[in-house]
Length: 141
Length: 346
Image (cartoon, rainbow over all chains, first blue to last red):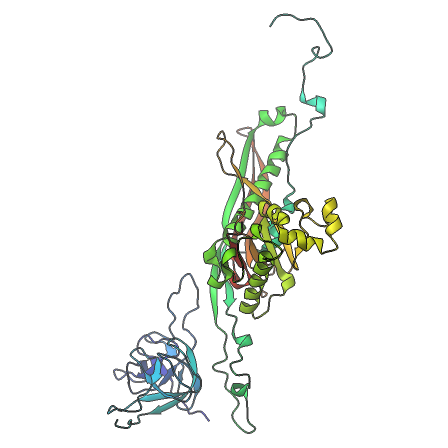
């Protein structure tokens, strides 16, 4: 059973299927996550503009001030991979909001945003995930 | 000139009436241009617009042979399908208006022994069809218009030894090339394109070369057409090249349109619109006129806002007649994965 995600407005440019985090500068807003940020969910897969190949060169889910769907706790959605991902791995954000495997050893808490339900072989692939918001502390190596 | 005595051939002024105004011209029937057989016409109302292009993946996406990712256990929430969407894009087209014009003075028209206005209208219609052929061929022979895996030098196709003209019964390079292209098209269209929809377009020089290859000679030898081949009576439109209408199951269209590439007065240079070395395979399903709001996988379409309007207007003030054929069109390779461009074929 999926959880209910609040309605959010973009606080900046957010690309499709990227992790988002709470925008601390304004209420009810999210921005694209950076490396190991605490996460709010995953941005919608659809784009905010009609894909006119001759006029629109960038694909964004939303820009500042626009509504967007954010997949929250328990939701199933697509997430853009930032590296190779194994099925079942817990994922955190890389520097541009893509999903990368959370570290399982070390001293830094890992802000997890999803669990991979498929395997991705390289960055740029869209992998099916279930949103899982957590901050597990890895085992100290 | 000195005065002469009369004879059977000098007692009248020779004129055009002597032949009943016979005109020697090479008026090619515009319906015979091959371009209509490998490019589909899409009538459009606006000269600028977009067509919707879908990616072709989701309909065939089976990640696991067990289909586990589609399973739905009793009592459980149904799969949401958030990850099951196909991608799309709007690609633009932009028609350009072309005018193939002529202008004749009233005196020229009235003094001419033949219908010079109608003849020029006909000439301009053929010029327009030649131009349309050029538009389509340019698009269909531009490698950048295809996916990278849908362009290949003939000799680079795995198993081939040389070009088509060098093929032998043992090499089978022509057959292998056509099958290779068809497989690539089936792969990338998820087999949506039927083999019956594919045509192979070659120019007449390549047709003549193919007909002389050992591979094709032996191929025809083994078909019921062998006797007709010897008699020069092969059925179909390719008889004059010694080729059957279909080769290995693929219809062969010989694009024989020629163009003149020099200005008036210069030594005339003529060439084929389609180069010998760049034949192509294209999907051309359906009738000549396509439907704008239905799925289409014709490799090349001609968006047509105005279809070769023939106009003649008499300019009374200046005592002359202006004529033109107006065509507002653009050719585009809209389904690049349904075609294949060969290079280095001869």
